[in-house]
Image (cartoon, rainbow, N blue to C red):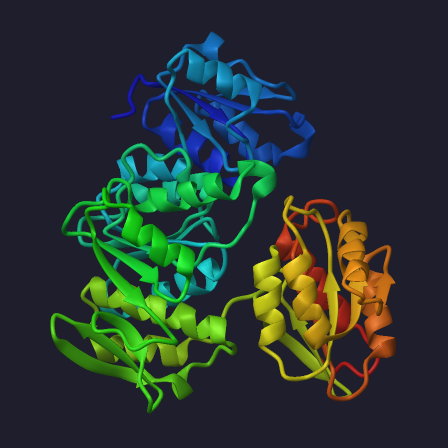
Length: 459
């Protein structure tokens, strides 16, 4: 379907590089643009693309209209109000995400996971569950491998389990997951979407093209999700709610004996005990309930669902226990890049917390996070661009146990000196990492390396 099509790609990150390679290999004429200079990229990867005939436009803002493309692919890091994209939209050129291209290229059924928090954990857990029931299962999207890299290789009967960000969903045009999940909705990426309403609208696009035979798994305990489900009459898919607080006549819930139940069409089935879950925190119970609902909708047997949950140990950089040193537990939650994630991380522990927070802010308020800090945190250690903003929010609420660190190294050293047995040193930044690190993974890896280099750490 791509032969002789003209495709212009904004962004030479992972998804842009993968899309350029796939499309050029399919016979499309491809332009790949990025404002960063050629030296910023893997030279081998650029040489491979050039050999495929990809037109490399690096170190410039780009002029897609001049290339007269049939379609523009917008990488996640490129906002729709970028002048060149506005000009292209005015010229009537369709703009899509890499996820849309993957959907057009694949024969697999799709399970799409979105929400403000819990996406990576739920997607990873679902991947493990689905692999017990199906031979061909790809896990990726906003985590790991770009979907377009594997989409064309997947066969009918296979599944693609995809983590989906608001950036990826805002430009879908036909994307239709067989099973879609909205885990929760809290303010995030307001620097990009401008308003919370715009952000929520992007998330709900996961269901826009679903049909009556598809499923939408929704958080009953999240008032905005429940409200949206009631108001969006145009959604055609079957809705299945999950709740850790309420007994549901239809949905996934927890009974008084601590058993996870699936109730549907007048029948209820116990899947497994809450005690069997290996990942800590009430938010992770919600993630498990969502995964149980999605796997049930996909036709996975209960015993395979239960086995997948029992075996799942969590994901890197999300409330990841690094080690305990002299009675102090060090926890890496570098993927906690918004305030709601940081709140959930703090709620996971009943021990005094030294919290390392800060980084590149996303335009939201820190007030709710500071309320939780006042309740749970004995010392707030701040780094990065938004350190001053977080400090101001804390001082305004009368919280003053604050230390400003000029680096992650000095933050960890301070916490190690201040912590006493029984404390938790928690990296949960509530911010993006790009002011100091390449991504949250690099930030988390650096934190783990610093912890493992502390006196008393055992290899």
